[in-house]
Amino acid sequence: MRLLIIDQNAESVSALCEALGTGHAAVVTGNWLEALSHLKAGCFEVALMNFDLSGFPGLKFVLSRLPELYPQICFIAYGQGAAVQQARRHGTVEVLPLPFTPEKLRQALAVRRPDLVLRPTARRTFRQP
Image (cartoon, rainbow, N blue to C red; front, top):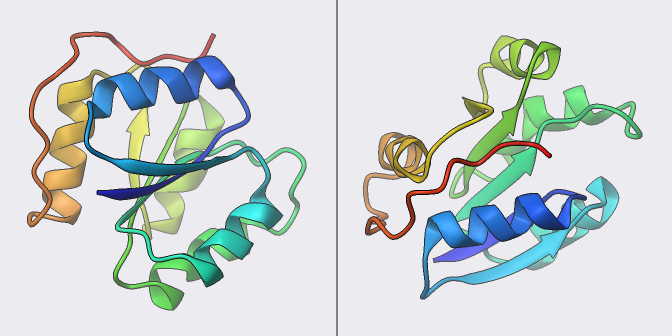
C-alpha cells in the first residue's frame, strides 16, 4: 500500500508504521503545504493525517476538498478533543479519536477502502505523547 503520513511527531509516525505492519511504501511529512505537493505529484492509496489545525489557517477548507480532488485516496484523520469534533463536522474524512488501536485503524481502512487488506501485526495503542 502507498501511504502519505502527515504528522510532525516522530513517535506518532513510528506508532502508525508499527500498527500498519510491513510491506507498505510511506512518504512522511509534518508540513501541510508539502503534503499537498506530495498529493499532487504522487499516487497514494491512503493518507493518514494528524488533524491539528494549528499552523495552517486554510486547513479546514483543504480537508473539505481533498476527497473531491483525490477520490482514489482514503483519507483518515486522527486527533483528540476539539480537533476530532471539527474533523467530524467536515464529514469528508474518516476520523479516529485518540487513543486508537491498530484494529481500529484497520477497521477504518476497511470501511473506506474495502479493497485494502491489512493483517493484524501490533497490539500497541496509538496515542499522542
